[in-house]
Each structure stands twice: as structure tokens, then as C-alpha cells.
Length: 276
Image (cartoon, one colour):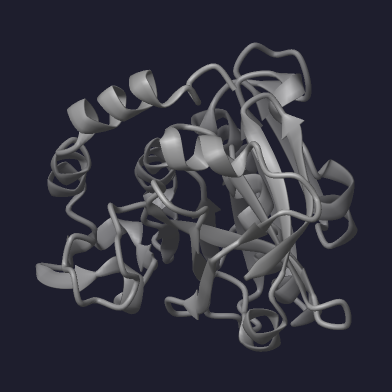
């Protein structure tokens, strides 16, 4: 069993979970994820690592409460235990001295982009970090990201903090300031990944995005996370979860993600977790 060290809502509908998992923390690298199971009646959920502490043996995850299983995670308290934290899984983000890297985080991706930003800066890159959200109250970890960012850009769609606009506004700012990236990396929902690919592909550099496919075992055995990248079938859990968004078949990916919406809505409605 894995003990919960901390669980709190950091912004509306987004929770921070710190779990004692020393064996996982010993090997984990930026860009990797774990499979978490909250207990009987819950699904196995893939969640990206947002931070870790080797000395304490703790793993930090930021997750969005969207269904029955994440609803149960959102009710955990310090001292509670969960039966499963499997990982690290997936390929780590490629970390090298690229030059100038734009890192984009939205929603739970503001957490999972943090170890990537930190590792890139430690490699001597110039790191431009963009935080994106609907409103100021949905942005978090600004101070943590600022420590390893040469420039930190805040975007809110309602204009309540930083610049007003979506990812396209971030691209406009990059152009206006004359920044020429050598790589773009985005973490967040599929919409963010898709729009980042659309808006930043013109730089003609890799636009690396984390694909949030349906996933069960995290080892490539079940096959439900398959996606098409550069005309080839890939499994997001073992070949990714990070791919160059310019090569992803986004229409196929969107269609596959719609398969279980009816079942998910039914479970939320009958679980008692929908209001948490």
C-alpha cells in the first residue's frame, strides 16, 4: 500500500497529490507517468509526474477531477493509502542542450511541465515558459516555474492576469519579441496539444506534445492507447506519451477518445463523486 502524504485542491477542480513511493521516485524522469489505482471500484488512471523528492521518497501528481476514479482520489486524506502506484512508465522527455525551448503548460500540464522546465534549464537551455488558463484563479506554480524560466508568460482567456488570449496569443508574443525556438514542448489536455501544434508548427522545429489517450495497463498489452504518428501505429504508453505533434493523426485520436463518453457520464452520475 502507498501512503498519501498530502492531497489538496490547488485551483478549482485540480488537485495536488503527494504519495510515498520511493521505488518509483528512484527511477522517474521528466515526462514519465504512473498508473494510479484508488481502490476497489476505481479505474487504473495514468497520471503524469509533476515533481518528486528523492530523499523523502515522495511523488507529486497534479490531476483534474473529471470522473468517478479521480473523484475518489480527490477525497483522499493524509494517512490514507492506495493499493497501486505503478511506474515510472513511458519514455522520458528528451532533455539536451537544444538552445531556446518554449515550454507550454495548461491545466494539469502546468504541473507536469515543471520537471521538464527544470531539467532543460539545468542543461543550459534558454527556457521560455507559457502558462495558459481560462482565468487567473486557474493558474498555479508560477513561482516554481519562474525559478527555471528565463521568461515566464501568463495567458488567461478572460484577460484577468497576464496577456488576454489563448495559445495563439502566446505565439504572437513570441513573434513580436523575436524569439526563435529550437524546440516547443506542450503539456496539457488534447485541445492544448492540438492547438499548440497548429500555432507553432510554422517554426519548423519539433513540437513535442504529450498525448492523453485512453489507457489501461500502461505496458502496451491492451492496445487501447494506440495512435497513428507519421503514418505508423504507436502505443502512447510505451512509444510515448510524447510525440511530435506535427506527425500525429489528430482526427483519429479525437475519434478514439470519444468512445466511452456515455459510460463515463453514467458512472459519474451514479457514483456520488460528481459534486466534489
